[in-house]
Image (tube, rainbow, N blue to C red; front, side, top):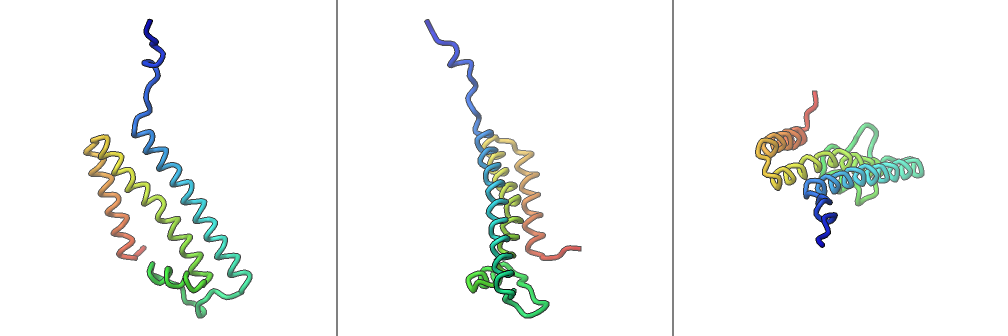
Length: 128
């Protein structure tokens, strides 16, 4: 006698696995960025020094990384904010991969366009 129960249980599709991985990465991205921002804030409150002259803030990603190494509290806070910004961008990039595996060409094109616009907006560094 054949066991039909094993055939009736649907296998988890790779799309659900990818969505779970993306979901976990979004959660961890937010948690890690919050921890980094909090650490920078605590460091600022303990030292009373931002690490920069009055009115100056790091405005480029290489500058932030360089200043994090020197333990400048505002740079540490900026690193947390950059990670927070990068988290949903990672989600868009991961979605492209999931759509490629699903062979869903229209969504690959649309999502690639969205990712390109996100990256372009970061590279242009203008917000109006």
